[in-house]
Length: 182
Image (tube, rainbow, N blue to C red; front, side):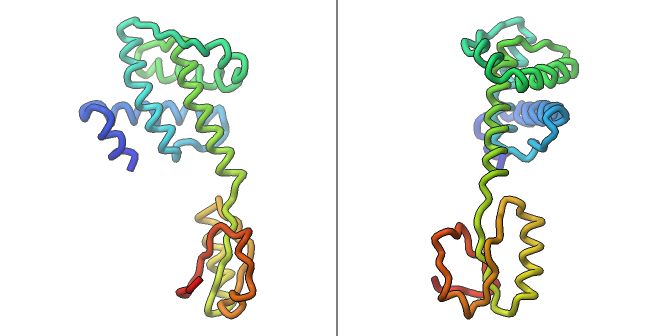
């Protein structure tokens, strides 16, 4: 999906290079943030879209002014420092030096990703697990789902026969091993 989306918006000859630059940047950032961001397609795409012209500007000596730079440096000082370190690493690889203004813009992209990451971690989808065969099968399924989908919270496990008694107000998703008519 990401590469198809990038292909629509980036020139064909540079989309892979831009995505690789974005992924390299994210790998540097992850070291200092202590969390995983390489799975954030939106971050990869946005960074690719920004880094491609930013690197061209740096090669040509064009400085883009960021009117929010002081505010970013003040309000997001730690994130700005992490972004600066990652920009230095990427700059060494690309033989360029990104300006403080560019680093400010990159900080904004990274800040948005950090906020998305917090939301995903905090808000877990409330799941009702319905099983037609028995609680043993449902418990196995629950364990499998939790390990593969850490953003869910299995609120309750019910047999098909007790489904009519259930209130669905606080349930986001129903996962069932049998067909349901609700």
